[in-house]
Amino acid sequence: MQKILVVDDAELNRELLGDILAEDYIVLMAGDGEEALEKLKEDGKNLSAILLDLHMPKLNGFAVIDEMKKKGWMKWIPVLIISSEYSVEIENKCFELGISDFIHKPFESSLVKKRIKNAVALFSYKNQLEQKVEEQEEILKQQSLIIKKQAEKLKQLKPFNKLMLEYHAAIMEVETRLKVLNEEFSQEYNRNPFESIKSRLKSPASIYEKLERKGYPVTVEGIRENLTDVAGLRVICSFPDDIYRLAKLFTRQDDIILLREKDYIKNPKPNGYRSLHLIVGVPVYLSNEKMHVKTEVQFRTIAMDFWASLEHKLKYKKNVDSADEIVDRLKECADSIEVLDYQMQEIRNKIDRSRE
Image (cartoon, rainbow, N blue to C red; front, side, top):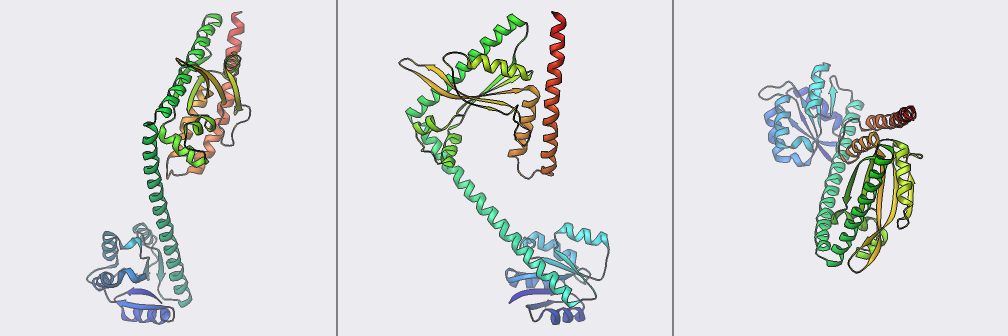
């Protein structure tokens, strides 16, 4: 049977609660706060709950709670307050201190039993959940260490470093070609089709983690054949039509191979994300060979890039308050951005036509 500690300076209250709970629990008694703390030191780990009076001589209920918090006992023993008061202020204060529930005087046996049963069950579930979270965190920590070690091994392999060189060369090749197109536009139309280019090369740790998660072989050929985003570029444009014009001009070049296209501008993701994604084969010339290297190129407007950076923070930040509300607001912002992008594009077109 589970053990419960009843702490109350009134002997009658202790006896009443003892009679109510005797069939279901082993009931220990304490007449004041000091005695309660002594029993907690002796047998605290075996207690399923504490019924605690607030107003007692020597050491009151608040002092007991304070000491329990210092010792860490509140984390694994639910505390139910015994009280004849119905003060909202006191109840709020107690809940802020971490108590589980109230049992009001006079005692009604069925209600007392249910409140204790619920408090014990909820606390047990909470502790089990916290333990699972701790276990998962430990697993993730171990996985992170494994990934780090394996990434270090990858970095020491000559074939892997050669592959990274190929991806880096592909990034430089794409950047050069897009900058040439940008210069041509600047002279021909007196404006630039894009504002900036951002590039990144996936880290060895990220490469290893993705191969493991997807079940692909952790080899150079496994990377080359199965990963398309090791080399990535993000092209930030002012207007939606510049995205399509620039992407078309880039992929029409006879040595660029378009492998895959995902248009999240015409077909946005459910969260509102909008961007044009291309997976292309980019020619890379080394001293003794030529190969096409898979490269991911994303095209976004300025406003959509700002939106995506904010959404990324929400996605990877833990314990965000009102996360669901933020997701809804981000979706509204994404829809507004689409409208604004096309309105700005129409204004630009009107300005251009007026110059003709």
